[in-house]
Image (cartoon, rainbow, N blue to C red; front, side, top):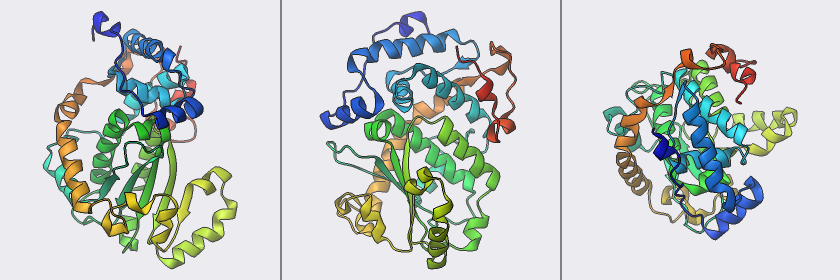
Length: 319
């Protein structure tokens, strides 16, 4: 990263009129101020001796939108993004490559399906996660999360619906058993949940569980009254598939989910082709991160504390 690059005029992909309206209204986006805000972020990254971060425009723009244009929050998220990656080596390791055989196997099984939306749509992007589409005796949960994190990163760079409107997760639990639940390592689930919430710039707009066992649906709905209002509004649990249509028009879904938007196989082929286009991007990830010994505030990060109740980032003075 050199000074000439840092001061280069930003080049931003224009939003559709529908998305621009949402960005201005909900995210405080000011098109006339975008270039100055991006230059400010670039200069800040350049000034941080401990931080080696990407500075391409769409990458940084995702953090501005995810912080509703609070520059200080955007700085904090970028710092967390790289620092917390180092704290989850089960996910962010040398196998996080586009052409890694294990990654491609998981993509081809269709465990994670990113649903294409029409270009003029202004709604959250949609991902279907097929919880039982992989053999839990062959693949670790960390392997699945690794692939999901790669597509999440691609999404924040090239999917304007995700950075402006957020994302919706559809969790298909058909055929789920106790073995599948025991397969989930609580510590990793906790860590990655913190990473997704505090470091990724996209806003989660909701999670919809479909095809869950009827007993689980009844038990969950009985406890809903005790949940915080925000959580109530963001989580839906149903033993049926039909609830999915309350969130996503049927026409946008693949045929296997009652839609007319191609098949799961079509989606898998598109996702694999897209992932392979990012081969160099993920290959270069090893050049980015943090060097804690160079952090100016001299705070040694206690990762476990951050993933618990009190985190080191809450003590960090970003300025």
